[in-house]
Image (tube, rainbow, N blue to C red; front, side):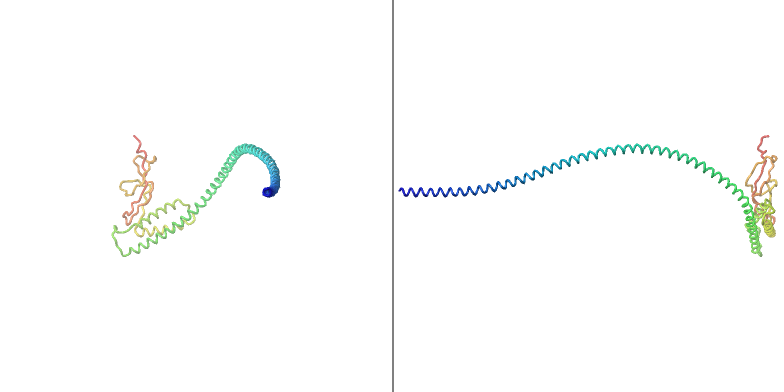
Length: 296
């Protein structure tokens, strides 16, 4: 029994030893793990401390930079305000200068315009005088040229009309038409031209170039005109009576005529006769006495 108890006791001791050893080993293992964890914790804490220091340093730098930026921003704001003030001042100066400049320019413009007008008027007046002088001289020279050219034209017209009358005469050869059927339109036109040219020649200088050639051409034309039985009658200066068939186109009153007196003062176109028969009654201007209008 004692042996059994002893064995049991030994068994329990062995069991307890084994359990204790196991616990001891486990404890040692746990201690080793704890030490490793402590080492890692120390390492992490050291890293955290380093990071914290770095962050504090960076934050300090950022704070210092922020202050510097703030100061720089304030400095720039002050400069901007100063520039804005200077700009306003410059605007005021520019406004004053513009107003003064506008006034000066207006004054200069007025003076310039006045001077320009005076000079322009002077130039225009001078040019006008020069033009008048030139025109006067040109008229004198041109008048001679115009008269000479008109004489040449009239001479050519006279020759042409003479040829037309000759052709008309040739066409009428062998034709014995009654007076009422004869066409007098061309001879009437010729008679009017002869009358017009004769009146012009009366007012021309005998020394005018070409006037003698015109007279000769006109004489030849009138001779041919007369040979064909046509004559021209000028009633200028004659007393007007109702029997006259001339057409009165205008009437004027004159103080130098006696009451009731009527005179043909001007023939506009002459009377033209063919073999004693009027083929154109002509047109005239009649002068009557203004005394007819006065009360007795």
